[in-house]
Length: 173
Image (cartoon, rainbow, N blue to C red; front, side, top):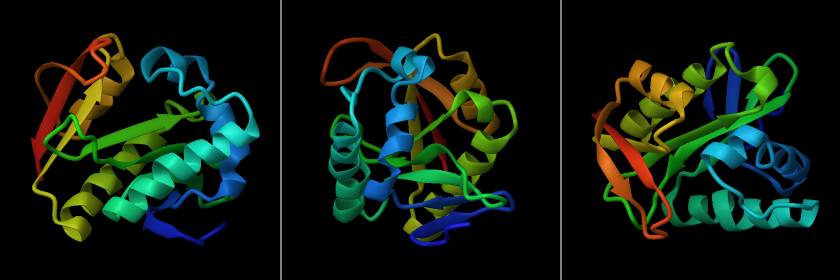
């Protein structure tokens, strides 16, 4: 198991900072059909694109905010299985939580375990008092997980890109 860059640990998972060596994993994850359907096309078609995504996304956010989306690995074998973390979006007043996992690791409680630990980290380590999440209206799995985490639907919003109405969920920490 790689503990380098570990930020959050749970009994089965380590959430750590992305490195450029994670490009192959990112390329696979962001091109998963469910990612494309529910999150959108990030224009990541090559390993160079994936490295650019890591640099311009999680790494830059961490430098700017002290938090970001983290790579989620299984403790048992160091296998990267998804991402989960905190995002500061210009279009939202509050920090939001985001998560995505490869299909073969869904339905095993990993997303809940990673997201619950991320909520605790947001409250205890960062000092956030409120957290939100956004999702497209038909992403039933994400909405179910948000409910289990204690986030409640608040309203529909449209972000700056104006492309699609999204459901905004929130909770006090």
